[in-house]
Image 1 (cartoon, rainbow, N blue to C red):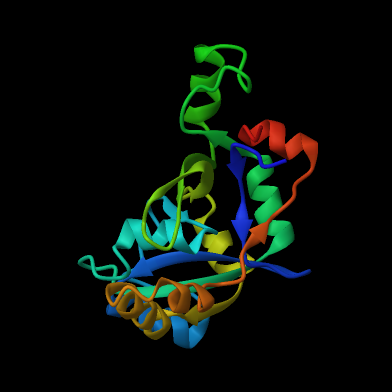
Image 2: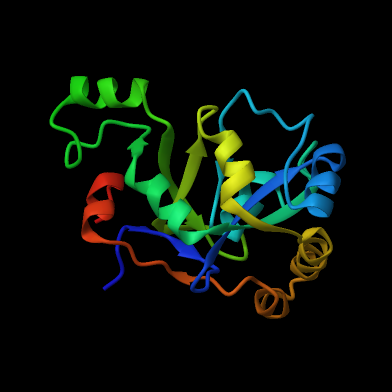
Length: 197
């Protein structure tokens, strides 16, 4: 049975792909070196999303200012799951936290933020399921950059092609080019921590 919160992702035994959108100055060195470097900010939170279509909604298919390069970032699955295990939701879910004060206490010292937003389809419409985005705080960004990332793939051209097909009303053709995302299963313990139900 489908859950209200789902992690849909393109993954294999070793890595899971998360998506981010950047400008050329940040994206090109990252693609070349499989690592981020300045002017990428190591002093503030960076948000990663395993749902490609959610990032398409956020970046308007790579057409928003400073979001014209779409990156697929393959990170180690064990790092991903360790991050989720210490994640704190961005709102005080009553089924996860004893009370608002308990949530606030955890949120203030959280190294990983977890947020659930409506998943999207190829047309941009909201779905009932909610998709995860994960905020990696400045306390973990260096580790994320140096230890979690296996590869950074440039998906910009593919994204433009899909968006062109969408504009022509060719949604079936565009859909065939989407990343192969499927449900990413987690331990019951991690699911409870991040509010999956």
